Image (cartoon, rainbow, N blue to C red; front, side):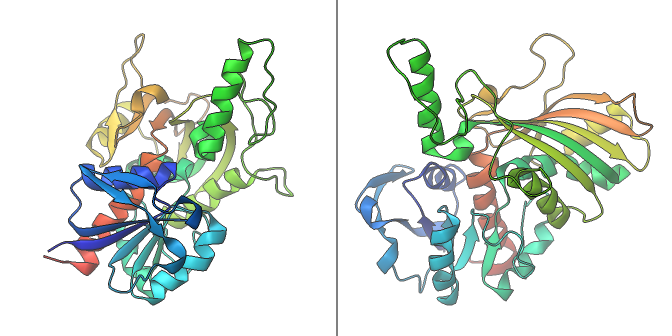
Length: 340
């Protein structure tokens, strides 16, 4: 006996990935419904070897469905998630709407699976920001061993984090570079993204940080440990899929790089590729389509008594969004709903 699962926003990048991953991981489903806005009504999406026609989110009845994976913006989520939750369907939300709500658990299954039981307060579980998700997977096993005091992280985030519009803008601007008669001014991003990097993701806050940077701080504290101090610089780069992060960690006690490497090799969800030779590390292009969070360039920080540096890469459409949501669904089914 399996679950009745709804994917909301099934025609978008993340929604399609959710359907792909549900099929790839052989999630126990009896029935899957693909929902979209009325303008996408009837669009066909794939689920394994099946083709599903999207249904109208506005008129859909969530009663009798076990869980709904939401991959729509915060405004639409605010309208439809409470309806699904009130109908008894557990919402797993990929937007930022509920991440900072103290009554809604924010979960990365490799890090804080025990938090899943908090879903019952609102029948909603939040999925973290893409840049946070991969980072805390890397930090958790090291924190368990040596307790992290402070993290300095610089991100190199792909344009798919900004949706289809971001990917289209990079593609169109890249083509225009080679066509002197073409001009593609920035619309999705604040400056041209082709052959460029932009140190600006989301809106600026009063202290000079961006909201993306603030999210990494707030979410790490909620998911991992509120005592960790973290500062972030988030940068958009001309990569289609795959986020990268250069992470500097200060611990309360000394942690040798070799021990750290061994710890990470044994940790769930992590693949260590760390050879000190040409190509002995992972780049975002190589992680696309993979479930793992890849760690490379593990080394002591000689400027700190108890410091390490590492390089962290992951497919942001997967671990940063769709995969983590499906892993939450798996956790929910295993620990709470427990169908046969």
